[in-house]
Image (tube, rainbow, N blue to C red; front, side):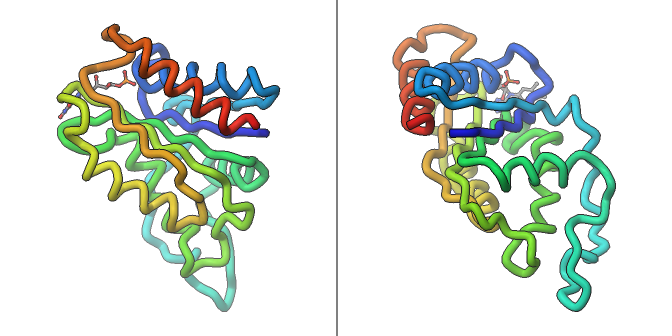
Length: 183
Ligand SMILES: Cc1cc2nc3c(=O)[nH]c(=O)nc-3n(C[C@H](O)[C@H](O)[C@H](O)COP(=O)(O)O)c2cc1C
């Protein structure tokens, strides 16, 4: 089982990364692998709305020459795709938005939808109480469906966990997700 993860948080040891680490532990236990990327470490520009990707007479992938197509080509070869983003002022943070806006080039009105239908886990972390952003992030998860992912889990985690502590159960839940993916 090969998994590709994209983390939108700028924090290399933050809550998104801590949850991804637990999932990776589960994946590795089952002899799978997880390749983890941070949006901040990549060169990914915002969508320019040029709509070249929507011209079905001359179909192309996103014409921006940066790391987005490279990463999504890896996702297209993977069994699963994990995306993790923190909440900033009620929404996915800027890095997450920049990444997800580029999905415009991969919706069903293009020829670039993911044909491998990877299993997908969407992670959203925040400081508010658990569940506070469930409705928001569940809606956002549809963007992953629109590019061909099979969303199997939306992990919405509040109270600045897991780094704020009190989270053994949460970490084990995340490990189990990894074990399930790894099988
Ligand atoms: C600029 C900024 C804005 C934030 N806004 C919110 C917010 O509106 N609601 C909330 O619950 N948490 C908010 N937070 C807290 C983060 O969402 C939370 O700590 C998250 O788990 C960080 O994830 P990370 O450690 O992976 O970066 C904000 C944090 C920052 C830095």
